[in-house]
Length: 129
Length: 278
Image (cartoon, rainbow over all chains, first blue to last red):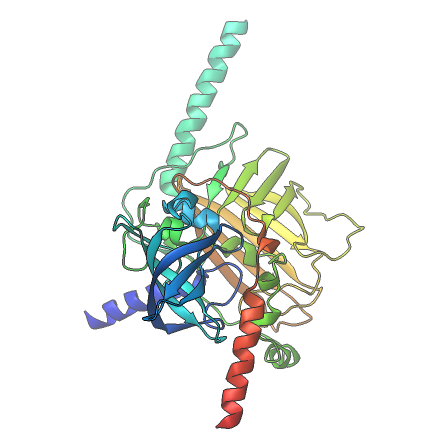
């Protein structure tokens, strides 16, 4: 039983390895796949662009001063095909977004899951690698 | 006379269709491919064109979240399990000089990170759809990724034009070998990567691709990669192409907004500085 299970796991791993999650650049070189942070704030700008979208969010600290975070997501076509359309992101609306922190020390990250004002959730980008 | 002819055509078409569906059930798996069969349910036979060839026309995709779903979550448009698996992953059999040179590259040097064309066979495995337009004289492939396209004229002798200048996607010619569409690709520049970081090749790169319909929604893809300038023997790779549901090829203008390399460069500098302190 065990070898069968292991070979199934290995086969699944190979399948994953064979297909890049992002088509055009390395995830691990840019983001820390082990550091998932949660950000909450109002959307200030949306770049619905290729090869990846960017969502900008003002995150306020305890004193009320805001830091603008840039969060990268899947390509626009990929998002649309999963039901995440451009009109779901409205400037001024407050969202919660989980993200893998950038390794370059800036206030940026790879967006993972967005919680919209109505409580619904959608994935904005891939799971950490 | 005319009605006799019409009856004959109808009968012939019916006979061909019957033959086609029989062949489709008999040939569930590619004959030559080292592709692994899986235990899928009964397969829906693939259609044939008016000239009797397996009809590959339509949208296909090798992977990606829009067809596979997120890890651990069901896909939005579930497909039946694939009846085959891609060929096992092989290490690229590099000559010593090429293996040494490979180590000198980083992800920043990846042509696709700079929105440059991925070349063949790399483009086929991208997690974005491609569309095949098949005619008796030419097969055209429109790729969403990197807005690439290939025209593959059908040419029994697989003869390339004699005025080729090396290019990113090379020059393709194809022929039908029974039910398998065989494509010969040559005339590449040496700027694309075959697969992972630094997977270089020379202008002597020669790729032979085999496309074989397995069922209505499954197309087996296999590429044999030769390069006497950089490899010690041919390297075999491939993927299983599926028909994604509710997906069409759309625009992907990669250069539009691409700050990733800047971020990666900065991240690498920080890492280097951190390591130097240790």
